[in-house]
Amino acid sequence: MKNYFNYLVNILFPEHCIICGNELCFTDIKDYPICGTCLERFKTINGSRCARCSLPLIDGVKECIRCKTTGFTFSSNYSIYSYHDWPVKEVLYMYKFGKKKVLSGFFAEKIADILNIKYAGIVAVPVPSDRKSIKKRGFDHIGEIAGLLERKHGITVKHLLKKKIRTKEQKSLEYKERIENLKGSISINNDPAYLLTGRERKLVVLFDDIFTTGATVEECSRVLKGNGVKDIVSVTVAVD
Ligand SMILES: [Zn+2]
Ligand SMILES: [Zn+2]
Image 1 (spheres, protein in one colour):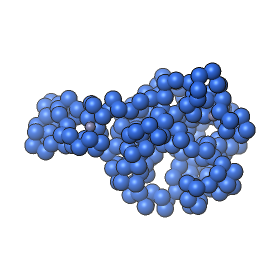
Image 2 (cartoon, helix red, strand yellow):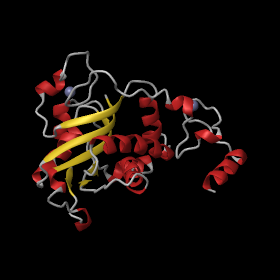
Image 3 (tube, protein in one colour):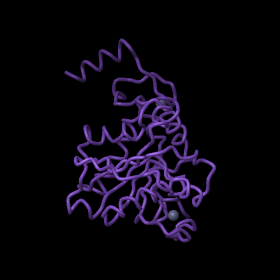
């Protein structure tokens, strides 16, 4: 019934692919406007990758220089895509800064796939955004994904972290400056609804859109560890 309804809606009001602009056909109708051909353009990181941060590496190299020289609190980050592999950056940009909230379905689907394969049954924790960024974007880009992970993909999500103050724009900062900039901005959410059980404390998986220097995941991990979480890993859409 729902499919028939979608079919009719699509005939009356055809949607277009956000990447190539072609009209979406009935078989393309998902929660997000990307056609089948464009979905195939997203290439996951398949070759060698850094065991710690997921950065693509040449064959035989196990860890990148960045991870060798940085002592991270979290065990590992797994990124699905390389940020600069077209059209990853473009689609993330449309989502975060182009008010294309509808793309949350695409990112949630991809993150859910990895959580189910690698971290089934582990509590997933969104990397928090501060109120000003949410206002500027018009929505909470990670919160949207978190909602879909819970409602549509059946993943246990706990909003264990909150971001208190707006930090400086991170873009141009190096790892050490980013860590300094983030210090004290992320704290634990004491809402009793998000209390972890003893078993859940053993490992939690953070999720976010982009892993750049690792500073944000690091700061979140420090806060979680300081609050009794034994081990932290992360899943991100892309590594830069
Ligand atoms: Zn397309
Ligand atoms: Zn690395």
